[in-house]
Length: 338
Ligand code: HEC
Ligand code: HEC
Ligand code: HEC
Ligand code: HEC
Ligand code: HEC
Ligand code: HEC
Ligand code: HEC
Image 1 (cartoon, rainbow, N blue to C red):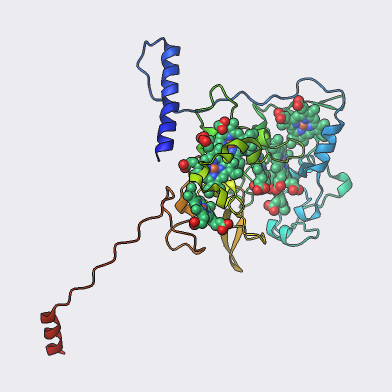
Image 2: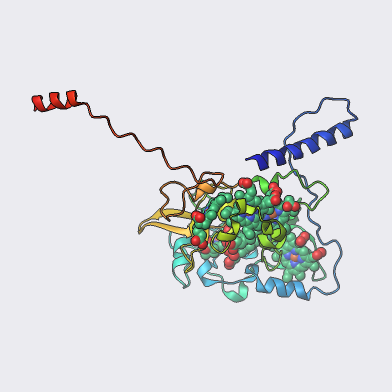
């Protein structure tokens, strides 16, 4: 792809130039891995007069909920309501997370204690902020056992106290909630020097209190409006194919969203359970620039999309295989033998 190669050269060239300037041309430039280092997102340092809007935002979001179908017990509380967590609790044999999702009723594992709604803390201001006179100030994580604050070096580290994967431990218990950031589009993008930095922390996209995310289009409206976007083919696909079905770097399967009536293409995951294989839409947080058209338009695809190469070209029809030349001698021999 000429475009990328040229683009990356410009970026690399700019870096080498920058290094020459910085080093005063003393040393020959070395090729370095371009890693974006961004200052941590600003945290509140002073107490605003009125925090009503933050309370309202938090109330509307998932961090303030009590949900009987989401294990409001002393084990699951570790992340769902840290101040209700009993570190001595072990996960009950059954019901497990699956049963919680399947049945909209109170499900508590053997030996786990149900926590009533009036005793439930959820994830309040003090879990993430040092509180002064009832007002939220700087960011820190409240250790629910010692009730002491643990410093975090940035807001993502705070989110990752709970948005983690804890499976694979000796007890065979755990949950799988880590958000995997990958792909070079935002994390390792060298071309923004002097421009706006790409989102690097969770709260660059997610409002910390409602948790509502910014959508791709909120920042990239101009990029996708260009006639060249997706080799000029974006227009015919924009109502069907989501950004991440094309720009995903995780290698997930892609296809129509199985949960939607409309065929909106997205990243999917197929798991095999007792009822056989089932396919669900998944959210990918790994973004790349380079898109291979044949991720969907591959030969023999089940959706009858036109066959295209990775670059979007329609491959020439295969050269017809020449008719086998009749060999009268061989034919004769065969007939004789038979
Ligand atoms: C290590 C932290 C942690 C523990 C322990 C934990 N959860 Fe969660 N849970 C989360 C986070 C974070 C989310 C939101 C993640 C998301 O939607 O990607 C979540 C979301 C959920 C959801 C809704 C999303 C979904 O996957 O359908 C259910 C249901 C749930 N948890 C049930 C439970 C139950 C039941 C337990 C105890 C057996 C439990 N959780 C223990 C962190 C945890
Ligand atoms: C899950 C963690 C979490 C919880 C719970 C939380 N906050 Fe925050 N809060 C944050 C983060 C992270 C930021 C920084 C946001 C940013 O930089 O965009 C923040 C920022 C703020 C700010 C400063 C905003 C600014 O622009 O300077 C205020 C005020 C605030 N929170 C109040 C509250 C109040 C009040 C509550 C309880 C109703 C609360 N927060 C609950 C994580 C949290
Ligand atoms: C104390 C643990 C904890 C911390 C810290 C935390 N979360 Fe959560 N988060 C959860 C749990 C538990 C849920 C699921 C709540 C539910 O659905 O009942 C959740 C839900 C969410 C959801 C909605 C998931 C969905 O399926 O819709 C988003 C988005 C989210 N959190 C983002 C963040 C961000 C961003 C931060 C950091 C500013 C953060 N969280 C910090 C525990 C936490
Ligand atoms: C580039 C912007 C962006 C950044 C950065 C980002 N998110 Fe998201 N996130 C989104 C969008 C957009 C969605 C909603 C996707 C949808 O609904 O299709 C989402 C969905 C989610 C969900 C719910 C879906 C799920 O996987 O269950 C959780 C939880 C979440 N994000 C947590 C996080 C955390 C934690 C971080 C930081 C480690 C983070 N996000 C960073 C844009 C972002
Ligand atoms: C908060 C703003 C913001 C959001 C939300 C956001 N991006 Fe970006 N993205 C940027 C910035 C800034 C850059 C750096 C280059 C630029 O300025 O375009 C970037 C870079 C990129 C690049 C690489 C561009 C290149 O020329 O190499 C791609 C591809 C991309 N983003 C796709 C996405 C997708 C897909 C989403 C949604 C999941 C998304 N972005 C959400 C701000 C954002
Ligand atoms: C049909 C696949 C497809 C879809 C859908 C798609 N893109 Fe792209 N996008 C591409 C291709 C192809 C490129 C050029 C990269 C390449 O040549 O591999 C590109 C380039 C970009 C760039 C870099 C533009 C530049 O000038 O440097 C951004 C940013 C971007 N896309 C964002 C988005 C966003 C945001 C969406 C959703 C609104 C989206 N894309 C949907 C295929 C797609
Ligand atoms: C994530 C899957 C996906 C990727 C990747 C993808 N497409 Fe498509 N494409 C589709 C779907 C689905 C349709 C059918 C859209 C519709 O009918 O609304 C389509 C339709 C088209 C069409 C119109 C119908 C036709 O075949 O002539 C063109 C042209 C096209 N794609 C070109 C491209 C090009 C060029 C690329 C690479 C830049 C690409 N596509 C990448 C899914 C994809």
